[in-house]
Image 1 (cartoon, rainbow, N blue to C red):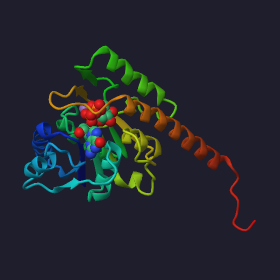
Image 2 (cartoon, rainbow, N blue to C red):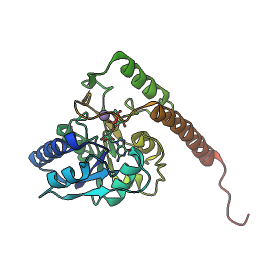
Image 3 (cartoon, rainbow, N blue to C red):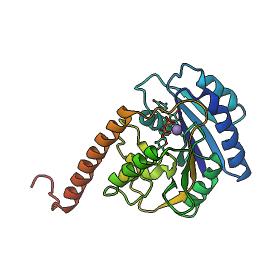
Length: 242
Ligand code: GDD
Ligand code: MN
């Protein structure tokens, strides 16, 4: 099994080399076959060059994206470029511990279709977030409850079998590509693997009020998508020409 690790980046020059170094070390020690795909939106700080250097001697690529900017479209493009049968997504800012990638991969090896790095199962948590951000994150997860049983529905750290999202139209608008995948993927079998989210030390977060508005819109779109699916399943099937 080849694991394609997709890392979306925007102005992560200060973090990307360490992320790549730690991911390489953790995956090699665990005996994983992996590649690293950095999906960069032409960051003005030179992230792409730093990533290219850190990738030397490692399978993978740096995508210098000129298409529509954004976290979700970058991840989607990373998926398209991936050669692995298993896809992993991790942030570049070291908030998600790359040392947890082998545990996520093991869950897939054990038969899961999807393994989600989770702050909201036993052993998981958040470090360094003010109460306001903790509450906002909890509320965001709560709002997604009718859509998925996954407790950390807004997680951006996950691994999935490529087959589970083949033929699935992922809407690349918005920030939460994870939620899009969790709701739409044909994956019936998922697990949540605990990890502790650590607030970034270097660089700045791209989360702002625009991202929150995008999230609410995404929730509405997914509710509509799910409702339409339910009707499709319950409607008696019509034969062509009848
Ligand atoms: N290519 C690209 N384009 N990457 C981006 C963009 C963009 O427009 N915006 C953000 N990124 C990258 C960042 O460089 C980082 O690697 C990752 O996406 C997450 O961005 P942050 O700005 O650090 O987001 P966050 O810390 O607020 O939220 C993250 O953590 C949440 C909790 O796990 C995101 O990953 C969320 O999806 C996640 O839910
Ligand atoms: Mn972050």
